Image (cartoon, rainbow, N blue to C red):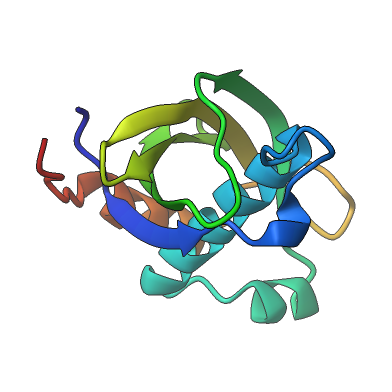
Length: 143
């Protein structure tokens, strides 16, 4: 198992499943997004305030590898690790593990950037500092 910066626990709700009885593939992106937002909030990043100032944090790429299906009622957690990959881009390495067997359900890499009021990539210094602090954090997840 990998080391993560943050961990957030969830439980699958019935309405997230498709006709086959498994979580719909698009729902996994909601899980990942919620985990990213919660992690960024712990760093002091306020999406609403940034938007008021004309700064938008956006996803520019998502790579998802589906490994095993989750079903209604399953408990699981999302592990998140942050990496700076360029002066204006950052990557969230995220994995979803089913409980209690720690079966890997999804492995993903979500790349984001900050856009200024003109819609151009620009990483404000304050956001860069907060993200750098997040990169240095480490949460050891038991195997």
